[in-house]
Image (cartoon, rainbow, N blue to C red):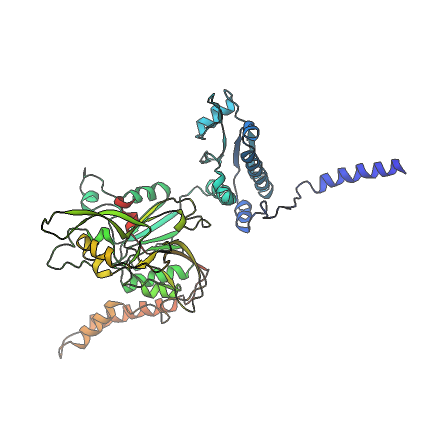
Length: 488
């Protein structure tokens, strides 16, 4: 009997090893090894081999047990990627000991070595990936602070290797992000584009369109609206239909742009009040939020110290003032659970607005950036008069609670234009011209042109999307000045 039991045990063990080699059961409390449906989709759609080299120094586990446990988790998750991909993801685990070929290779690909003792020996804990064309992606060192985003970081790396084309970001801006007309048109002129523009171009394929554009390019992966103060009805409708078609958008708006108001061209004339606002109330309403145009938000706790002119016998006298309308936002005011804001440590906002959900909205409103509990509403009129009103604004400011300065919006939405595309201006002009024609005047050509334009409008109505094909994926930020070089 014992011999039979032993034989059965061996047989069952061998059989289960063969049948359930790839079977896994996640028994962790937070389901740390259960990958999302998005990751499964990315891994199953890979159509070319991807090679991953995981560099993990064995000394990490000996000297830093907590990091060693994290390293094992990373390796286990990478092995799960290999399993799900059906062999399209290939994994090589390397231990880059000092003065070995593995260490030389780790340095060559750009991994970040960290000293672990007084002798200066370095340990490595990173990942290098290549595709069939030797396009490389890298995680120089796995930061434990990003452990909750581990799956996102790994999946993004694999996705970029499987899809090496840079995403296309289409920018519609009322500010000279890409530089002045002079710098772009005059050979040899200095580049005066903003820092953020250069960083965008490093990461994405960037295309700039006019504020009066009537269509959004078909290849757009993300639409970035930056202070579109001169956007007209047809352009808003184009944005609306892009969103209804499932397009992703970031809208950076502002009730008062300090950087634009400081433009010398706007300071000409007798008026001391400089308007420099952008808003899209029709679109924001359809997305379930509003940005009150008269609200500029400050914070007495986050106030930045600035030099402000004072009233007195000496006109040039200045004083250091904690100005509540200029905010230095810290991690406490940034959503640490959202990937966009999780790693940011400091943002400088200047006279921002607030984002508020509206009653009956069908979207989910997730704050990304807020004031502290000492936020409050300042006076727009004083902000529009610039530095001469800093002291008055500071003295009159009253804190009354927390305000949302940026939010993520998601969920089903309906078009902000329920009646379809707005009537083109050219149709109104032709109709007026024909009605005002004098007796006997030949209007046949205008009648023909009017008929053509009306036919186009009817076709646009037929193509109108009344509700979103996919859930809204948008971020709205109520300040644009944080993008300017002076506050970057």
